[in-house]
Image (cartoon, rainbow over all chains, first blue to last red; front, top):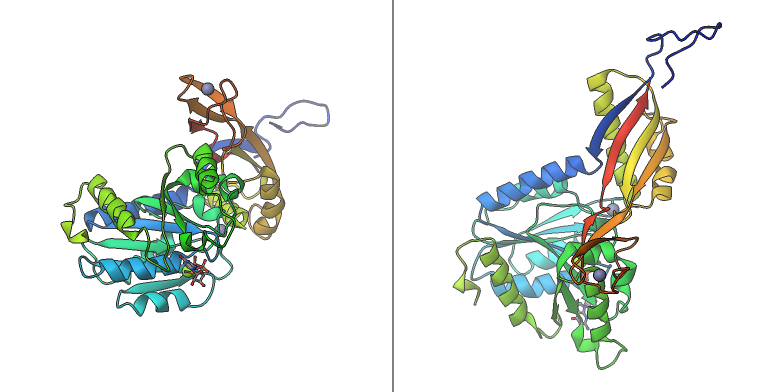
Length: 243
Length: 113
Ligand SMILES: Nc1nc2c(ncn2[C@@H]2O[C@H](COP(=O)(O)OP(=O)(O)OP(=O)(O)O)[C@@H](O)[C@H]2O)c(=O)[nH]1
Ligand SMILES: [Mg+2]
Ligand SMILES: [Zn+2]
Ligand SMILES: [Zn+2]
């Protein structure tokens, strides 16, 4: 550190205010604090929260439309939709009769914890139910932003290309479940399921994998069983209601 | 890009520290970035200048201390260094790894005036 020197070369300590300060602060600290508040709030409200992430168009909204339609009669369900623009996705959810709040991030390419906390306050009470958050279609930064969810679900489309887990490892490392969607397309496209799973487990040996088709409904019974298991993990009274 | 959001986070931290410790100029922002974190140091340098313009951190230089990626290998039962998440254990080739270090994204220190 430069303490300041007079022309004769004598050090004059304290003449300059220049100094180095050690702060050791997490760049995402603010988001993480708000996410921790959200998480505490969700636990108090006995709410199971999933953060769905994927590349654009992998089928998050289609999956949610089917899921909330099939679960809404057995327990409270709500959705928070994140898109850069439009309220199309929230409109698709509301058409099922399930409450949805649309967040438009504008130039922002991910949801953050503050946006979710605010949107949650605008939803009707969902005590004992499930909240699905559909993140902005983007396999990069949503991995870094904790929203307070119980876990992340990465939706992967059979049309995405098997090497996506290697190209976007952070997202697959951050997710608990890889939901391989559009499995109905397998007969008509070139898709190697085993290779996709192998690549995903390279970056996350613990990731669970389910295959579904939001179009045909294939595989959803297993998805609901998985959701039921997560509810149990959160030590909530498990809904046999969930079928 | 999310480097923008991260740089905004850095500027916010610097502004808070400036209020708390009363300094008016920042010469250097020293970051610790882990190899397995979500950012590329070059991208941070590039974004920071734009985000910091007309803030207290205007003109500050970004210095990056890169921290290695560290993982526990379940096959060898020991800690190993990896540069990327998709790498196998350098000793045994197993992918049964659990990252234990290298995910840091921290503002370590500031050189201020
Ligand atoms: N064949 C087939 N098409 C599907 C399936 N799921 C979704 N799609 C189609 O894929 C397209 C994108 O689906 P969305 O549900 O809008 O995808 P998204 O992930 O919500 O997209 P963004 O919110 O824009 O990122 C639509 O044309 C859907 O009809 C599926 O299981 N099979
Ligand atoms: Mg959508
Ligand atoms: Zn982003
Ligand atoms: Zn090993």
